[in-house]
Image (cartoon, rainbow, N blue to C red; front, side, top):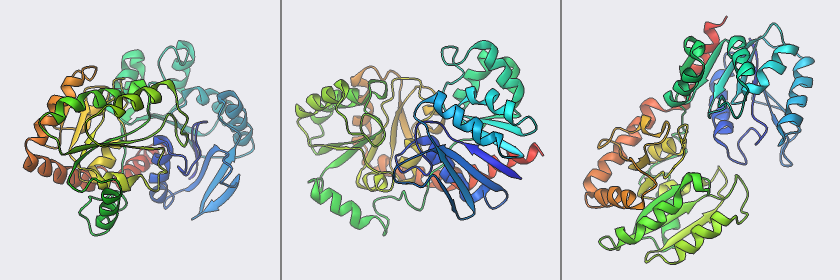
Length: 380
């Protein structure tokens, strides 16, 4: 089949600027392109050509950043082409404009966020979208259930396909391919004798890293050999200092333990920091669809502490591969869970080993790509 994948207007494919959706698309391309003729539509970037073909996959990049501008470009492109199936990522509001210029194409919608929220799409349009699409793929049961609750008629079209991770790139710190990198980073930042706690994600109030920073003093009363690594920035590929970034930096300066704040790390380097760490903490306060950093931490063989928000708990079996913070607004809950693991280093190692096994058996891109192919093939 001739298949078009339409990314969002925010970031380009491949994921040179980061982005969970962009990473997802890049992850499945080697698998799905073996079976079908694939075109990927995303936004322009100064470091990428507007049109290119790589490994048989056609990439077309148009003006974006603004949804309406991007929508016009999408419509203009689709109008001049013919595709058997069009897979739209996380933008239900693109479905009807695309349908008008591609009346015969099958349309699949992938949902990575709560984009069916009534504040983001009007009820009448949402119902039309659900009627027009053949399938709705979601990254978590949480997202699927949210859509079902709003629009019960969508139930038969929804399928959860959990995301994946490159297990050849994200590796445990004791893997022969990562040992030197881990040692170099830990030496450079004076972490050799520390248990390094890692946060990786956008620095925004909804991501909640300030709660982790505020939990550190309580943890350090008993565990003095810890350090905190904060990987991320205000927005993908940007290191602007927002009010929140300034706030967490001021909090971090007061901590009694070393704090490494890296700013934005390019996607092709971020796995180094996972290998350098010993424990991963996701601090999301908002209803997170299911943060892909969980899969990256798994592949890196790290025990995970996450929050009972959105889809995050769906990949954690408490006590087996991590722990769950029920009330992430409270820094003391993070202090309690982290201290629990630091008190039991054997359990930490066992959880990390289990996570690596899960990454290899359940969360590979091969599995994700094959499940997406199965959805497409059912429509033929």
